[in-house]
Image (cartoon, rainbow, N blue to C red; front, side):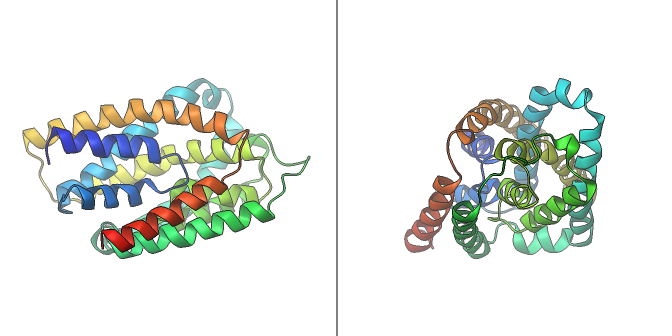
Amino acid sequence: MNFFTVLILSVVEGISEFLPISSTGHLVLAAKLLAIQQTEFVKSFEIAIQLGAILSVVFLYFKTVLMNRAMWSRILAAFIPSAVVGLLLYKFIKGVLIGNEIVTLAALLVGGIIMIVIELLFKEKEHSVSDIGKLTHKRAFVVGLFQSISVIPGVSRAAATIIGSLLVGTSRKTAVEFSFLLAVPTMFAATALDLAKSSYTFSQYEYLLLGAGFVCSFFVALFTVKYFLHYIQRHTFIAFGVYRIVIAILFFIFIL
């Protein structure tokens, strides 16, 4: 890897982390286009730049979260399923799933279809939960179960949590914000687990690449979060579902 490929991957991560299109899936496909081999460093790099994107949420929502303790108990309840799955299946996830192009494309395709179907069936109700702090812990845990499915690259953590939130009765805006905030402990834990489990030793140059990717993904994600919140208050998720299906088919035909 070099600084050019770091820039490309970081921009892809910053844009796709909070959109329901799978950041991991897009990183896998971008690496394929750039002919980047899925080495241990590349896999760790992809996890690290996800953390950079996640910190943009901490920056934007710091005051809101600090003043709403009830919100954090719901986030913790939703985080538990992913923590358990990540610990139990770490080797399988990193060794088999991450970097698997066929799995990624299949998940993008199926996920896109599911997203469109749910959007066509979903009708936001007047009494939908509009405050994360008012969501029951049981419902928050169910959202966490949905998030745990996103260990499969291509599923999209954002898509899984948003769909889960809508199904348990939240408003669109609340579903998106819950997805943003739930990403914080999830990706912090994923990065810490990867660093603890990995026996790979980074060189000074690789640390520079990690730092550059981290900063770039942070700023790109900062603008993406603001745009997505504005967009979803006026539109549905159908466009993202269609995009997922199209990108999966195009990659399958022309790249694989």
